[in-house]
Amino acid sequence: MVVDEKRGVIRRSLPAAAVFALVLGALAFFYPDIRDALGTAPGSPRSGAATHALYSTPPVPSRCELPDDRDEDIRRTLNALARCLDRMWTASLRTAGYHYEPPSEVNLVETPGDASCGQGDEGWAGIYCPESRSVNVLLDASWAFSDMFTLAHEYAHHVQEISGIADQRGSEIFDEAWSRRLELQADCMAAAAMRDVDPEALAMVRAAAGSAGAEDEEWAAHRKTHGSAKNSAAWIGRGERLGTIGACNTWAAPEDQVS
Image (tube, rainbow, N blue to C red):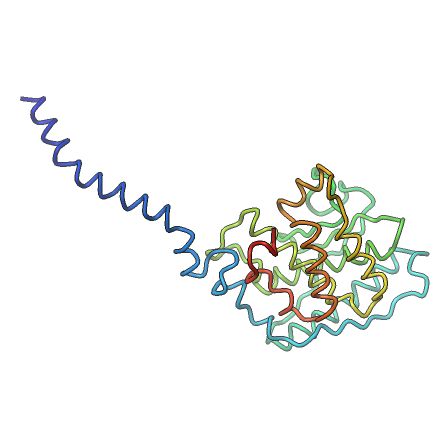
């Protein structure tokens, strides 16, 4: 009978279905451990981003000649700093056997709509466009060093991109945890590059980062992708003190340091 035949099919299928469900459940349960073992989880010491060759390079050569009055003409100051950053990262990457290529564009913009990407986004001081490899800084006339640090941060994203640290064509999975490690590393690398440019101003940026937006709702949203104010200040401090890319290895850091 048809009913009996259907029951036979159901009876024969149940053991296989049960095994399949068990395997899926086990994979879901052990997925974080599997990713860690394979080196594909953010924070795994075996991931490509955590074992990159740039972490063995010496301190970033952070000397730079800038206009005496940096606030008088912010564009002139930032253009001079961009040339310095190109020299710094050329020297640093060369020690690890990497060829540095400057950003395709450095755009100093008055409004987000003038940037190469992210025109519809709000609340950013700087933005890096991986597809065009362009750096964009939203000018803030209140204090030149704020824009200078933003420029250094976006340059750090450029280094992450051209060196492969930020490579998303591999097995790393993009999510908010991945984004926080990327952004906090850029904070640290920016501090490493700027530590000798103006140590006093950098210390002020670190102090401001550590106290920023503790009760602010906008900062709470920012924290999900960029990390807490406390952790941002801590990574800026590491770059400031040690000056190496290796000091900025957020990818191997425990989760509480990149939250």
